[in-house]
Length: 376
Ligand SMILES: Cc1ncc(COP(=O)(O)O)c(C=O)c1O
Image 1 (cartoon, protein in one colour):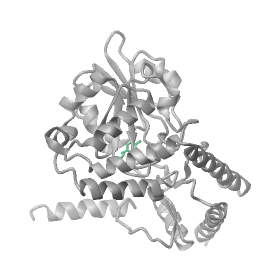
Image 2 (tube, rainbow, N blue to C red):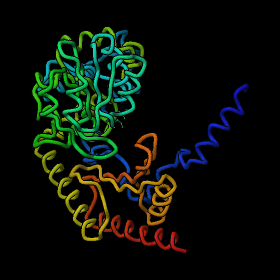
Image 3 (tube, helix red, strand yellow):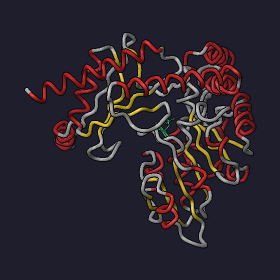
Image 4 (cartoon, rainbow, N blue to C red):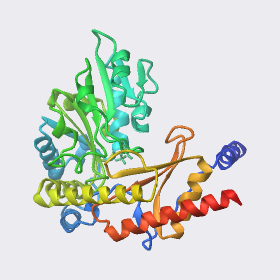
């Protein structure tokens, strides 16, 4: 290969910066505080049974892109179910949230005259808009700054996440919805878990207030894939312009059935019990951290963070926790801003208080051992 030396030197640079990434296989012996399966639905009997039945009936693949022949009855059902559940006119299914955000942003960037995104917006949104010129980022959750960046009397698109993926804090959705712009909320980490009914941003904002929503199926819903939810006109436009939708194989029908089953659970009284359990566990974790002087971030969502700053230090924390049988996310730049490398711990309804006790004890022990190592 002609670029061997360039590849090697780029990788070496990452190693030097402690930002080199490798895949580590998930160990079943470790307690997971690193995934986004907040309600434990990936292992829910109804969701697994729907998947298995779907494979039995429709096979392992949809076989084609949706506009060719990949669109089947379970896709149509899920689409209607989502629209009805979230109080919107229609939905369009994608194989991942990344694909949905990136291509929908691209498809809309040619329509809007100004696009304004929160500084901490997900990479998929940034990737979608970065080749256009008319976009700006506002300071994180700063509504006044967002207002300043909008262009009066022009078509403005304002973009935010509902619950931020790497910080776990929430956006001021109602205030953002009052600005003179169409609001697009990426509800990846809110759907299923936020709100009395688990309907996330759609529960808080009407279709008028937030005409565009991204919901992902691989986090609180425990499956995989995503949807863009909005007006019939918007979905019609995207059906004709969203390139990943047009040119990529549709998700398997079995997967659509599994997502439908997950939505049924989330919308049921069992869903409410799971959300209550999740919120109780989050509060329990936060209280244990407070009692032990662990400086976690100030939010009450399932994503809890401990900012350690230095990249190498964050890696050391993650490795030390592994020795206690605990896995959590070690997040470094460029995913988060320079100097804010962190542990990203996700709490789930399936965690027991004993597991939370172990996590907190491991955090305390790690802090002590790393402090000792620094002194000596
Ligand atoms: C805020 C946000 N949007 C979109 C995505 C992408 O979703 P998916 O994992 O379905 O590709 C993620 C994934 O981590 C996310 O955190």
